[in-house]
Image (tube, rainbow, N blue to C red):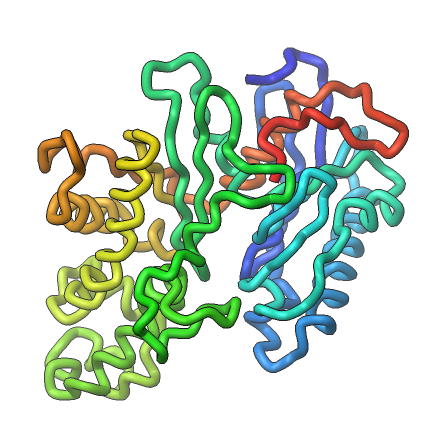
Length: 358
């Protein structure tokens, strides 16, 4: 996976929907160390700010955070910076959209070129899921091909097949969260502005909204549940932490909300399997990780209920597995991806054949 014991080190950055993460990845030993996390100055903190304002805030926050990191002992000997961004990214490092970061508006941003000028250092920008794939890639294994799915503030995915991430140079591919799972759901609005998208239904944000709405529709059932006792019997006060706790405890009300939300996600997985034959699905993301193995269990049940052509129910369930129980996927994946990039770059500081661009 790596380029050998060269001793290179990289600063790796994960620009997520709610959190900015920065760490040091050392090629020797494949170690991620000295990670810092801070709330992102994006849509999550400033939901009413215009997209253009959030774009400036996020870019400046990323640049200043990386500059500070590079100037600290953690930045000693660093040869490149890798930015994993929550949104479609072109082969040239242009972020074409970032609904969970700055909402559905805003123009495309040349993040890669801007950061290379600002940092005066070799800088690579790819989609966060593209980076995360390289944490779980097993080139040469019998089951090497897989689909990585994140269930967090939004939903995203990437397919790894025959040693590469399936995405085109424009960054298209892997935006499962914006599949119109239920176009009739006019009241289910995605961060991008679309209606009935999978990410608005089955993400952590979407499931929380569904739980609040379900509690309002059936207040008695809500108040009789574990959730009613945790938030003063007011569905509007419900948090993701409350919901996750109730799901893990086995609360019937919370589980019914989760199962309903997972149905369209299971349908999407069944479609991917039927279309291109991917038989392994690794689930990561803050909400899914917090729920834990129960998330895979209930998603597998939904998948078996729909049926996957050519598979038994048990085989369908076995396609689902949970990723590592942390939030370091994009950081570790980016480090492993950069380990494959030759130090030789073109005059713009970009290696054209960087694995899995987008």
